Image (cartoon, rainbow, N blue to C red; front, side, top):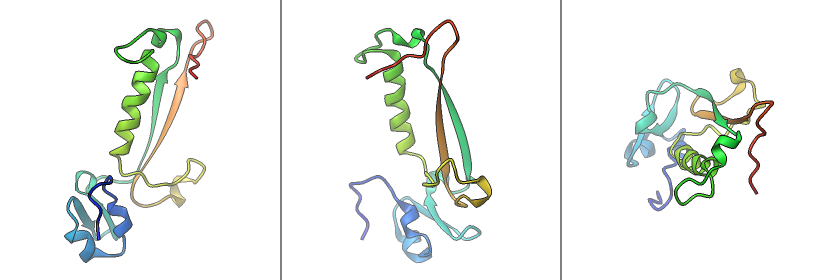
Length: 120
């Protein structure tokens, strides 16, 4: 039975086309033999890198957040929860990775004259 109080986990229905088709928000992709969220049903496997400003420029207060960096990290954390993550580590070569899902890497950048913002 599906629990609708947790984020959609269509991928747990892989190998079960009928259960996938019956699950709200899930879509069976026969070519990949995978159950995916309807929002991502036609998306190929994807690796993405998000580069984040870690200079002092993001250290200023930003709304209810102590600084812009933490505000951005909170937004990105919420965004990643909606993605169909593959669960593969970045150490797994793309050719050996899952055939369904997304891998996301975050890189914090700074400059030689402006230190990278460090938060506790």
